[in-house]
Amino acid sequence: MGGIKAYLTPDFSYLVKPKVWIDAYSQIFFTLSLGFGIMIAYASYLPKKANLTRNAILTAFINSGFSLFAGFAVFSVLGFMAASQGKPIAEVVTKSIGLAFVAYPKAVSLMPGGNFFGAVFFLSLFIAGVSSSISIIEAFTAAVVDKFGMDRKRIVSLICALGFLGSIVFTTQSGLVWLDIVDHFLTHYGLVIVGIAECILVGWFFKLDVLRRHINKISSIQLGLGWVLLVKYFVPLVLGTILIGDLYGELAKPYEGYSWASIVLIGLDWLLITLAIGVALAVRPWKTDLNKSKGRTDG
Image (cartoon, rainbow, N blue to C red; front, side, top):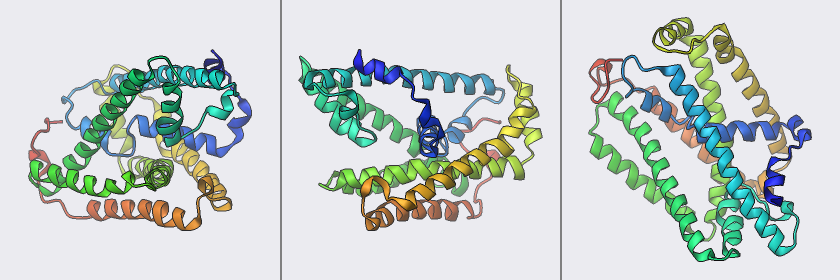
């Protein structure tokens, strides 16, 4: 109950800190797979007249609801750990990868039947990782197949092989440091940057009113002018402001006390290389007819 109380007790003073807001944006971007291209790839498989707004709202609320439910599970276990060790909850709670791979497993090991619950926890974590990787691979595969007409089996095999080789570094003794820094820069900054770019591209270089009329024509929940204002002005402005503020804090003090060499070589370079590869692939000319893309519906 101590853990649940800590989970549900708000501290409104944190709302004035830009880092809290960008952490929240990064989290919802990650859990909803925004900025990865996953939603775009999956949306391309929808029927021509799918109820887009209803599907979007259901997806957002179900995802957030499950996240809230998972919070009860995590903090109840952490509360048990704090009570068992006679420590305040703040001393046993950690963030990022430390929660999943250090604090939570340690808490589970203190429970009666800890070996069983630990096995269930890591099995669930493994299934979550595999299912997430399938969606990420599908986003990249769908884009490459549609744009360059490459064989699906070949490109999937290539992506999986490269991903396996690249991820070996995360299994070394310094793997947690690599994972923490790469995850911080890609989810903390990469997804937010992509989100801003998508809003600018769709809001300013695409006929947004045409898109809104199409969505309203086939959806049960209508989009008003407010949606246009959100996409064109509010979201990119808020994300940009938070991003600049957080970058200022990042330059004043390196992330988690890591050396600047680690931050630049592991985090910043990884982010820049990823964005550069994305831009390089995006500017390449199309080699297929979009209207004849395999596996897609007429819409």
